[in-house]
Amino acid sequence: MTEEAHSSLLHRARLKALFKRAFVIMLIFMVAYSAIALLYASHTIYKVRLNYAVILETLSGQRIAVTEVGWHTRPPLFTKLELEVPLMNQELHLGASDKPQRIMSRGNVALWTSAMLTYRIEDLKRWGIENRSPQTLLQNDFDGLVKDVMQSESINELVSDRARIKEDIYQTLKNTPLNQDGPTLEEKYGIKVVSFVLRDTRYGEKLAEASEEKKRRELIAEAENYAADLEASRTRKLYAAYSDAINTLRTNLKLENKDTPALFNFLNQQKWAEAYQKNQQGQNTFVLNSTASQVPVTLPAPNSQYGTIDGETTQNQKPNLR
Image (cartoon, rainbow, N blue to C red; front, side, top):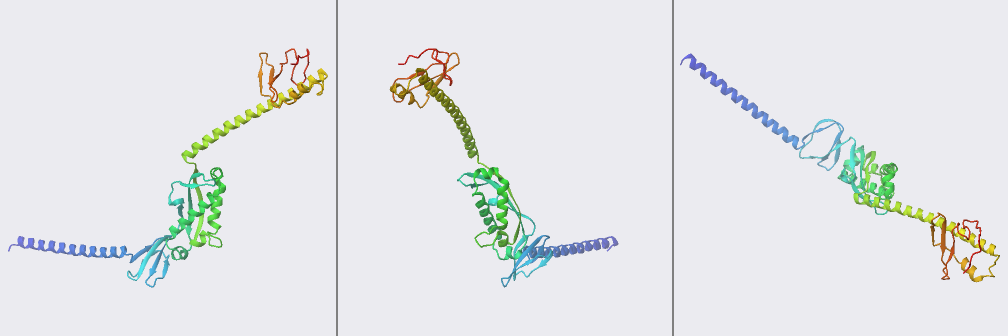
């Protein structure tokens, strides 16, 4: 065998040995990686992150909290990883959604509102050991307390007095027992209520349109009432002028009630000035109609021959009584 052939055979043998070693190393790496991944997937090896805690359930049924940051191991068949609990500030939305929720205010008026609670877990024993599904329980209690406060307020207070209502809800969440002689929200779940915010309080579109229509009608009614008050004021002034005219007429004619009982009974029974208008010269005249007689009595305008009725009547000519 020549030297060149011998060198070629050695080169091929080295390549085969190199490939075999690489394959074995890769196979060992894949087996180790799969084993580690399997252990991690089964939480046999687990990690506790900063500001987090892990609750384990042992074979005896005891639940313990692990708060030490770093990697930990557990027997895969004798313990169970229950849940991971964040110890940082967390948010809780009204109705478990950041979208506005429909509630009923006092008086059964609908309102759309959204709110958010910020809280922090401080007692892991109460949160994760004494309560099963604490997040769901806390959500239900939070929604109930907020709606109790908001539904006891009128629609106008909910829209215009947000600062007071927000503070009332915060104090209720922090200090008010869930039931009489019961625990507060903080005591029941081992949390600390950090803050509460009313994000949105508004009418629905149809209610807003109805509110605008109601305001428009109130303005119209107010204007009509004001016009009616002015009309009543004018009527009272006219009636006063009418009474003065009767007294002046009685004085000028030197008559008493007993002299012309029919006339003065008719005049004294006038209780209302039903109409008045402007004549062409701009002076006021008015007509009084009797409720007890069919004969109307007309008092002339100031420029007529019978004098004025503005409270100080001057008679230019004796009237003709009919």
